[in-house]
Length: 335
Image (cartoon, rainbow, N blue to C red; front, side, top):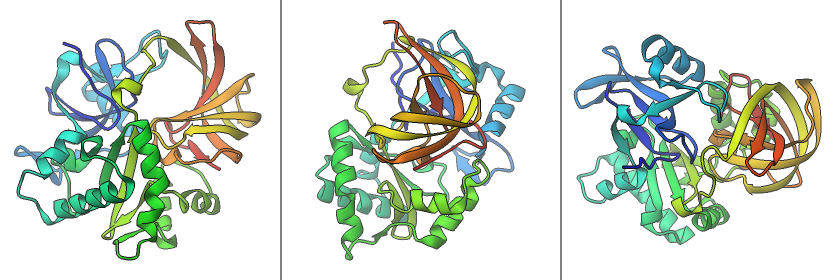
């Protein structure tokens, strides 16, 4: 029986590890996913009587798996690099964001769950999106939330995502709705948190983040909305393209296509590329990221990004280079 998993879904393994799925296409017998929560007697979160703690740093996630569960480190001839992935035979349960919303409407709700539902209803009303095309992911979905947990929403389907993005201003502009964009103090806190992984300077960080439509605060709770393609919109098959790591670089360029800027993963077509540091290659024409923080850069704007360069080869003979942003400490993107 095939395993269906995509960005925003979570996986619990037989050992009780919890991973969040990354991307939309996966190897035949594995699901690409990053470790998120691990059982830990000292952890402050609980699930089914077991204490858990969250691992934030990507490097620490890799190190933990290498030391304790190396079978979750995966490499093949398609990616030519080590990534985190869950073999199908290690999957105990898959959590789906849209299932959690169904449960919310049919259970006794905590005060925080009532706030989440209120936010969802505003989105349905103002953005004309059906409830079936929405989901709640993150710690709430798997039952490991704390009083400080953010609201992580998902919208499925390209048309729904564009409707949401183009109508979010209506929610932000309606003073009767308890929603607001991040102010300078909020951005300072966000910068301090992300500063652990990136080296972007504060002024550029503020300019990029303050205009975003997919993040903010609802009822004084941080939220992030992830835009994900519907199943029938995912055309790529795993293995059609192969990827070979070349090196790392800091580049600047000019965005020529931002059609997939609001999606996770996000993708930009760029031109007029200049290499400021690191490995230089020809025909670098794409920037790609699994990280939501890299979304929402705009067409016809200059872009500055640091990441890993990959040589991409397609079965039809297509060949080009792309920059992967967000996989390593020090990566960043802003426009």
